Amino acid sequence: MRTAVVLFNLGGPDNPESVRPFLFNLFNDPAIIGAPGLVRWLLAQLISRRRAPVAREIYEHLGGGSPLLANTIAQAQALEQVLQLADMGQIRCFIAMRYWHPLTEEAVQDVLGYRPDRIVLLPLYPQFSTTTTGSSVGAWQRAAAKAGLDAPTTIACCYPMADGCD
Image (tube, rainbow, N blue to C red):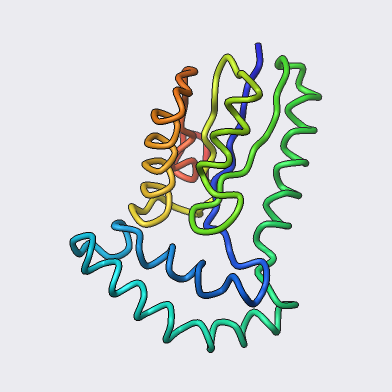
């Protein structure tokens, strides 16, 4: 049994030049701004251009980019090690970031190449929101359908509310 575990996260710019495109991707998401496509695109252009200089300064304090990808990679590696120790078959973790690389479409291609028997989607957001988990799962479903990735898929959603969680 080959299992792909896909960790979802927001993503973040990896260098100063990617701040504006990251912000554009964020604000062009219909889950963030529910305006019609052209209006949303124009608003995303305006907001990303105005916010990029301030955001770039903030990311400079973090070393020039977001630490989110590195942290998510560390989480994926640790999870993969624990799951492999549990002797549950072949398990490989993948990362799908919503607004910056590795984007969902990239993760779908990586999972497709792995040829899993099943897929577990694991949002790393602290709670369900249509702008985080909902947007990420929707993007995954669209990209997977487009790529022909049809392995049985389970979403580990809203786990803080699962039975046994205090």
